[in-house]
Length: 342
Image (cartoon, rainbow, N blue to C red; front, side, top):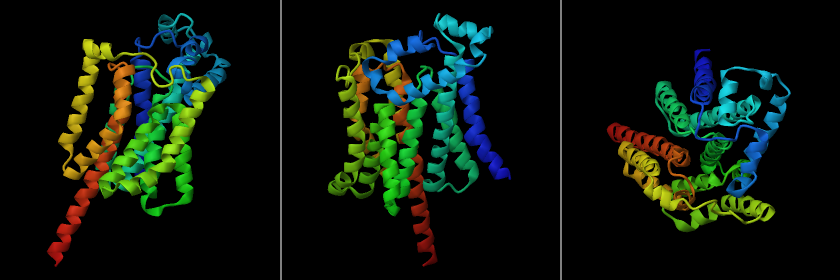
């Protein structure tokens, strides 16, 4: 009973609390003019955003449901704040952001927990829940830019990694198909799905150091990414197909954007610092190398001050850290116990 209560608190209630705090306690002024269906579509139906269809559809459909409620007739402080950020803003639309983001944040937390529980081999529930708590607190801090697809991205990322790790030894055709479908849906949501592939490649290569088996394994996941990625651009057109705008000069010249780059570098350094084994640090390096296309595109076309750009990278580095470090630690302890018994 107590364990079920702990699971409910850590995997549902705490993520919901953090989501409520960040959506209603720290209402962002950074994202302006996007709090009604019309203003939202005026931006998200163009440029790089038009290819991110999944969460856009979910958000608009959720707003249609909430618009039939009494939310938009309410006159309170939150309504006035929403209309201050967007004169055409609707409370139902802001709540739609909250519902979509909270729902997928909870799901992403559940799969982050499952990854730790099944593959990091923690020796106590307190360490397991403590690490999950760090995820719950850290992720929303970087999400001050109000968008519909980031938490959905984290969910698909964690789901894909869970299925990948679960299937390494089992090699189940059913799990493989489910993983490929998850990659397709993740790519329909946002092109950040490529980082899930970078994780797979880094994890496998750090284990075997063999290129041909790696390429053979990655063929189907790569297709699951490439087909929807190209298909979306064929359907919507190739303008802004890779880059939306060029922000490289602003990223290098603006103190705020320099701060974003600096924060990313410091965060990566901390992962190397906390890694206890050289094999974990090598896996970090492989992952960052495989993620270079995403990093370079973010520096060229993204706004580096939006630290949320680096969040998917940091989540995957965190998973590599806890999984590989704990696996190596258990292996070392088991070898020590074997030697002592001999």
